[in-house]
Length: 235
Ligand code: VGL
Ligand code: ZN
Figure 1 (cartoon, rainbow, N blue to C red):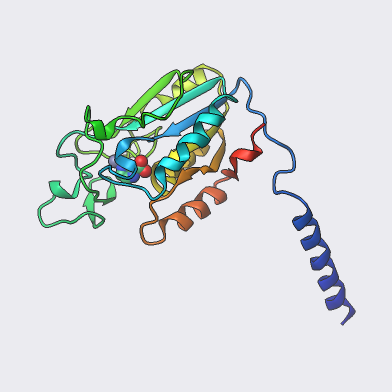
Figure 2: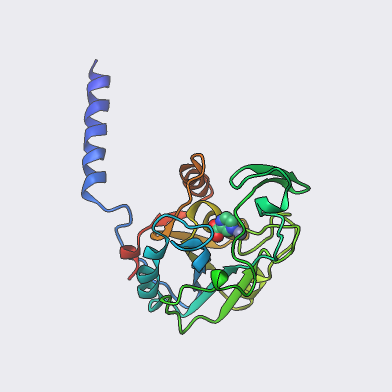
């Protein structure tokens, strides 16, 4: 009995400590080896766009503010061909948000979105990143999707971003943008796989949440060692 009581007391005391402390006690200060990755903050993914993410435009002021803390900023754009393989309209009898089998695995089918050169594919005009140095456009191979900024969905074709970051001595990435459970998560997971320290800044992202995909993405990211933080954690 005393063992049970002391275990209870122990649990109560650790709970009190957990409550008294923020999860990241120290603020995080990005340095010269850190890069901010701003994923797909494009017209297609906000209200009025072809694949709107709820509250998508709300990430803009958060990201604009974060930008001043970073020497290195990389921006990505989803950049599909007309008739892209990830579009439901490309597959007879398929509707958006259904899936199909591709040679590289299961593919979610989306409404036509982010077609190369369209206004829909442009970055949000309120996104102010004057110091950003690189824009990676992805998903431009007609038959292969690319959620990740690092590697296409065939899991073979590199975008070049890892080599770019490594050549510049970057070892830590902070991922923001749209959508948390697709392009942000795949980018963060690949960054871990490639050996980077990875933070996802939650309030600088918004999710699509298709059949529980948002919770699943956070679980997968956390298990892979991705750190989930808030913009207020950044110094
Ligand atoms: C995305 C679905 C399709 C994203 C891109 O940016 O998260 N999601 N294409
Ligand atoms: Zn896409």
